[in-house]
Image (cartoon, rainbow, N blue to C red):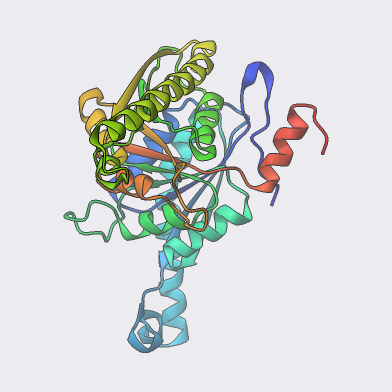
Length: 332
């Protein structure tokens, strides 16, 4: 399969490889509509896949073992294949109507594993999936397959929660980390509608825990030190926001910036309730994230408890870095 690319085309358009994973749940329909809402260009390549699950019970027993003779099992398999192919027709038609290059794929096995493997094989830039699947209980805030995909996929992941026909309002959380930088870079490359409004949010940590843990035992000295640190942090935040704000303004987007203080995930979710965005975009990990962790706590909490669709940005793989270098005329 061809290597993925997010190389620059004419007037800053971006060539993307996207994997859209669907089942027969309402959230899959929301995922398709959300993807189409980006107004993707003809340079975009989308693979629409669905997975026929083979559930494994205790002792490695599968339903396939109890489907009778070989002929009966084959008939069952063909019926499942036909149903899966039919399931793909609606998203295929919607995306092709927008001029996007689309292929389809039916896989068998464990859904999360198949999605992650396919994303790796096709070197996808983005995986789009519903926040819940057909078998997930309504009381669960996030489906089991979506949780595994957002944690283990190498690509950026978009978890769709609402049926969106246009991306008009985007909340972008940034902290200056390479992961939040990637979210910004990714959004700047996507063909968002020209009238889109971007809300740029950064969250400064509360100083209350730091005040408790200081060692001088002198309240006046402690307050002075913390005051200086807080002022330096706020100045750094303003500088960061100004830099990112300029990038979006150069694309012609209407942008507002907010500097908040508190627990990052909680503040992002509270801001979202007020701003009512079509999409929340966060980095997979922040400045304080441990590199060995696959997904940071802030990204996990936002994805789990958000009522809005969430884009989790990851740094590009080596293939994408090389593509970008070639696209910009650089040589490594």
